[in-house]
Image 1 (cartoon, helix red, strand yellow):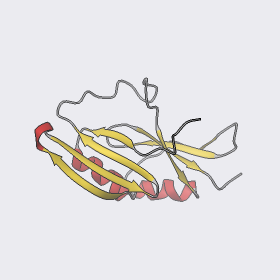
Image 2: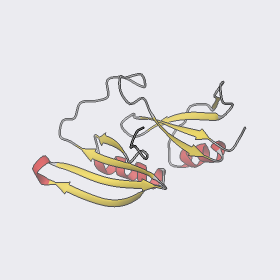
Image 3: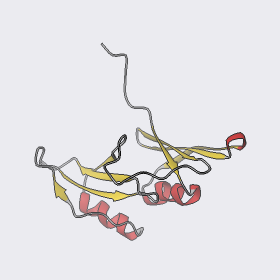
Image 4: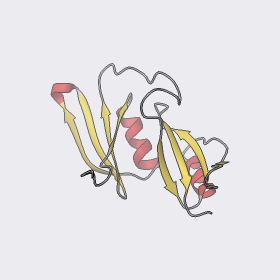
Length: 131
């Protein structure tokens, strides 16, 4: 039996710290828990939270870009639950964030869509209240 009790956080490396911080805070509604400038690494680390979800937002000098979108090896995307997908798509649009057309998961019947953060990291909205 595993001793795991849950997922603690997801770490994201951003190319432009201020732009990405604004995206996650202003557009997605995350709250900043702490921000640290790590002078020895010339790197920002910002801990963000939204409910029980935590993101560590980093910057690193000369970090390589994501090799492809969205089928690169490794983390494929982050998915956020929403109660009303149309309302959230409209809210994101008011922040200048475009979403793909809403689709239906053929196995669960739930509706979902994708959008991207400022560095092209694929993000998903997954509607959980519809059957």
